[in-house]
Image (cartoon, rainbow, N blue to C red; front, top):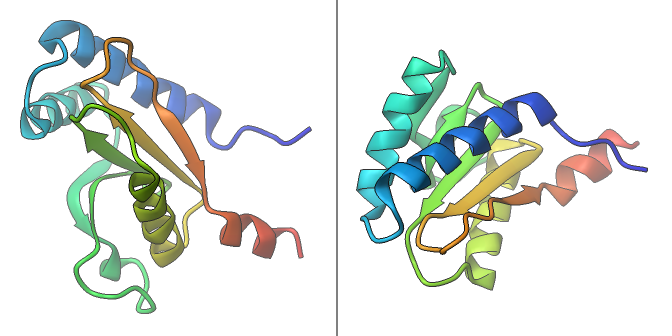
Length: 131
C-alpha cells in the first residue's frame, strides 16, 4: 500500500480551506478565497509563498509558471472558483509539479457545493524516487 504524502500538512491545509468555504460560501471570486486563505495560513503559522514563480525553485522550469500558493516548499496549492475541475486543471498541476520537482499538489474548487480537494501526484517524481 502506498503511503500518503505529507498527511499532516495536507490535512491542515484542507481544514483551512473547509473553514473558508464555510465562511464565504461558494460564489466568491478566486482572489477573495485566496486572500482569506492567506490570512488563515498566517494565523496557523504555516510557511507559504503566494503567486510563487516556479523558476525560483529550479532552473529547468520555464518562465511564467506561477502557482497560487507554495506551502512549506512541499505542496503546491491551486485555488479555483468555477463550475468543475477539468482535465486541463490536472495537466496544469502536473506541469507545475514537474517544473518545481515536487511530489504533491492540491486543487481546491471553492465553487462546489461540497468542497472536495483533489490531491495530484507528480508521477515523474515518484518514478525517480523509486530508482
